Every structure is written in C-alpha cells, then in structure tokens.
Amino acid sequence: MALVPRLCLGTHFVEAPLRSSQGDDRVTRYLMKQKLFSLGDDFIIRDEAGNDAFFIDGKVFCLGNQLSFQDMEKNELAYIQQKLLTLGQTYEIYRAGELAAVVRKSLFTFFHCTFTVDVPGPDDLVAEGNFTDHEYKFTRGSEVVATVSKQWFSFTDTYGVEIADGEDDILLLACTVVIDMACHPDSRN
Image 1 (spheres, rainbow, N blue to C red):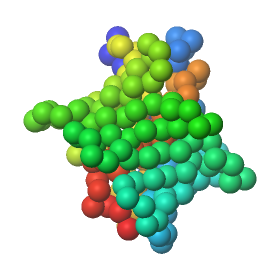
Image 2: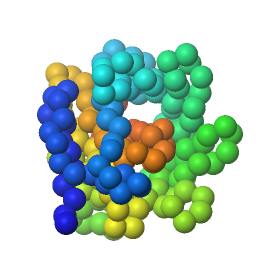
Image 3: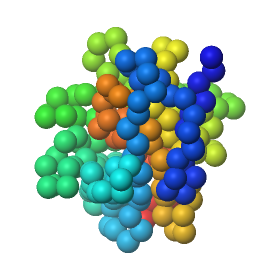
Image 4: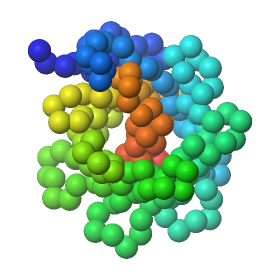
C-alpha cells in the first residue's frame, strides 16, 4: 500500500494514511507559523486544537543560524545551531546539552533535494520530497514517520506537520525549521 501524506490546506487537514510506529494511523498534528514581525527566525507551533504548544526563538546578531526551541513557559527543549565552514549546509540539534541530531543537506542532487537526519543509534531519518512546492516527508527506512505541507499565507510561512505517534515530536519539528532555513534563506526577516 502506498502511503499518501496528509496535506494541510490552510489550517485544515485532509485525511490520508500515515503509519505510526505502532502500525496504526494515529498521528499528532501541529501548525507551525513563522512570526511576521520579529528580529530573528521566530515560529509559533500550535497543536491540533489551535493552542500554542511551542515557541522557536531565532537568535539575532549571531554567525550562522541559532535557534532556541522552547515550551510556552520559555523552558528550552532543544537548541539548533548551524555549523559553519562545512561542505554543504549542516545544522546540529542539542537537547539537554547533548547532541541529539545532525541535519545535512545532501550535495550533488540535481533534480531533488534530500536531507539526512543523523541521530545516535540506528534510527536515522531522511527527508525527501518536493521542497520547491513545500511538500515532503520524513522516513526511517521505508516507513513514513512524518509529513510536512507548507502553504503561503500573506507574508508569513505556515506549515502543517503530522507526526506518527511514538516519534520524537520536538526533533521532527526542529528538523522542519532547519529544512526551511536551508531551502529558503531569502525568507528570513
């Protein structure tokens, strides 16, 4: 059976199958929106009910991109830092001071873009899809673990992100932000 990602049309999701790690169709949905008037790359992430769940604070006046992934009480849950002087765009994601993942944009892909998410252990992820049209998925092996659909609203970016139950929501949401910064550097404030 081919897996078809769910698409975000505005703030409403269109149903289609996405398998969780338990083998069923349970997912967690988020709406990620870039803030229009901010000094850094700031995002608000809302849950399916429309409640603010997370805040991503882009640091200003830094060499390379640096962001703090926070809960709504301003507790840092992850830190994203662009690695400079690397071949290809590379970002590191830290949790509790420990390296949680390295996200790399693959080099030498002429017709489509691919990102690898290197996590400790055997659970590496790959993000593939049409980044020009802002439709892509995260896979682990042949299993789809998350889908991202991006729609343009006014002057800001909005993403529909669906994550299979049992997956690391914070890591996948942080990777979504990294991919946006790597693919669309001109959308920065």
